[in-house]
Image (cartoon, rainbow, N blue to C red; front, side, top):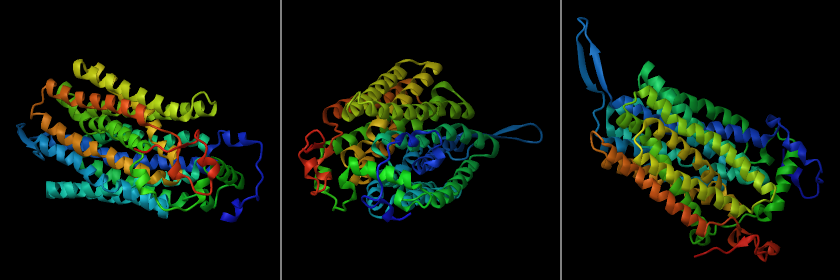
Length: 486
């Protein structure tokens, strides 16, 4: 399929747009891309979350039964303090934070397919050698996890470069949430499955299984996907026209190659609001991702299998709710019941406030059923905030969406570095409930701040600096364009 297929005037718009709304999604290449991206993010989070379960098995006490029936306590295979565990769990994010911007920048220059795929493939390969690194030295383990983070850091922003070319505006939330919900399904499966693998074959099996699974996905991704509809040899002419014409109508500037307006991006209140929102959501998310299995083990004495299963429930709720949030958002937009910025603010503020209330309640209500239920509601309601801010770069600057998401994710990755280390210092060797209360107080306060900040500074208007000079009719339309600088 060549670019000549979409030359201006070659196709005439067809009135039967409903053809694209049928249920046969395998006939729509944009949905094939979304589904493959779903499984890509499934692997991204499986490879990231596997250590949260493995570290419990690696540090738990072992016993050996002799032939005469005597039971000997061998102690843990890795006798790490809570501080060391905090550094091990956060090490991934040292690398992850370093390549968010680079992933977005290079994807905008060279396309997202190879960068997204390679990010998963290299992380999967390093995961296969993680057991050797752990047995050799804790510092080698830290190094391997940091490098894993370096390569996974490019995944989110690089895919945004593809979305800018693949997503019709009225399907933007739906397609992106299908893809990104793979992250939460990855957590849902990773927690109990990793616990099962550890109990059946030992903690090393966790890393071997997740590494092989990531490499299998990479082969399929490179074989099936394309950077843009024009480069997809299997896309129908009708779907190609629909995507290209929809994007042209909504964003005439998308075809023009321009230098990156760094000053305007870095001084935009809309961009800062996205970054603060990203940071806010990720603080609570990464706190639970890295600490929930240990919390359930420390406070409620759940065994590894039960901790893994219950720790996966919040992400099951997130996986379901993020789909619902995406469809509700697109429906509200299509029906014109709310403006785009009203939808973004409603979803983000609602999501953050519910999470703040749930976290505070968990801190004061020491009941295992209530704690799991409230944390599940908390993470699930985060789907509304996620559906708001993750597509926001496409609202304000489609041409530079991958770069904005890369910058935003750089700030949003800081909680992955800070939270596990801070938690490690808050908790003693035998943590009391009061110490875990402090752990939950912190995200509650951050959620409240994030809700207020986005409500005041958030925007969904196309930014002036994101529009080409050749589109003066948009430059003068205040309903479509926002200056939005400090």
